[in-house]
Image (tube, rainbow, N blue to C red; front, side, top):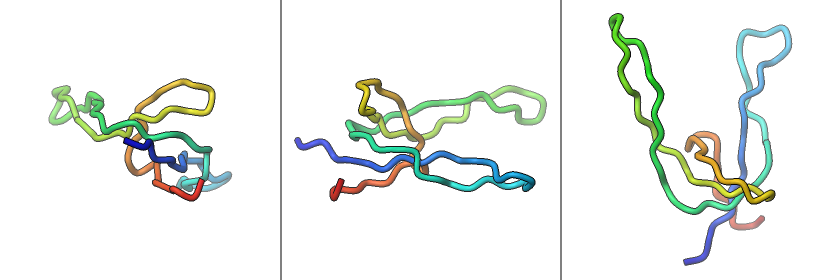
Length: 77
């Protein structure tokens, strides 16, 4: 199976503003889907919140889970 190329994004807080903007952060190679979780406090109790990530290989060879909203498939790369 051929690996697909992806554009990666990050959120950057705009100076003097209370919101953030999604900006291009580089490229990578998609390997497969994965799951990660964070602990959230709900009604005073900590519970796991699970979310989907793409397992991405970066140009330097490192691998990390990237949230799906921070990646875009782009076979033209």
